[in-house]
Image (cartoon, rainbow, N blue to C red):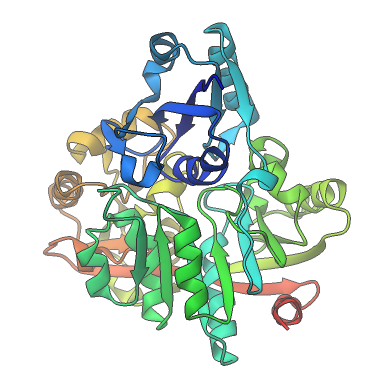
Length: 438
């Protein structure tokens, strides 16, 4: 049988999962390379042939997406599969147009070919956009189930940005595990809050093996999605978060619209910050796309560990990296806390930005008053710390869940700010979850 040459377009996450599910089971397709986008420093690596299976004698290269057309020609590619999330519908079709103009076919894989089935109840939490409030909800659900005496296996959307051979299956129970796996700031943002609650997090590359590891010591699986990607597991209950501050994105982002159309429960978040018109718009779209889904309104309550360290001080605000970069949010919890607690000045970080941090401001011009928590390499973490020191703030307002005081050497106070989920209306979400698990 002739093997059909393919490329997988990704960002070091779903792309590897799609390879190990669909492509592993369909050997008539030969993946010539992966392309990489969104996350810095993830190109110029390779996917290990030991993980790829018997049909691959050597590692599969990972190349920057900007080389797509040349790669299609070089490898005589027949199909290009998109395995990338948090894209506007327009951005998806621009990629499709590039692929077709180069002569290949453009493909989107669906849940039937990529979702794994667990023997345990599975609660999936996804969103229509990055930064919608998925992480605070996921932590609240995990805590609720844990407090009911259940062993909760938290499976996190992958962030394997290092040596893929060493990251096949990752299990995090302590801060030492984060150090052992050389986790980036983005990984720490997602894992550390669970560890602080005494929960175990599973992630990595091979989600069949990761699921088996989680099932061996869990009563229920909680899928905490990344970006607005779909779940890797077939849900017993699908909860989808929609951001009231970005009303309308649920109709215009991929695969966020897919998530909402499949939802059992739609959580309209940030209702404490949004207007009545914004909330009504999201609810209207939810009724159109997922008429059987239950609707829940929720606030994201901001908690600050040392508000007096903000008041009347010159502060620099650091926010969650993906939310404020490709997620498109100009600010987050840190900026709200700095305003609420009357900082004397919120420093504009741009004049002080170093190296790749300065590059991020050029790439994401919507950012001005906040500093994205970028730390995908040791060098970038040093640039982040140098940017903060050059701004000479009285304090750092840390709206990133990564706890910068644990990963950067700073000589000023760090005020930790976090979002906490708070249901405002609709059917009792935790009861819906308890029913699904039971």
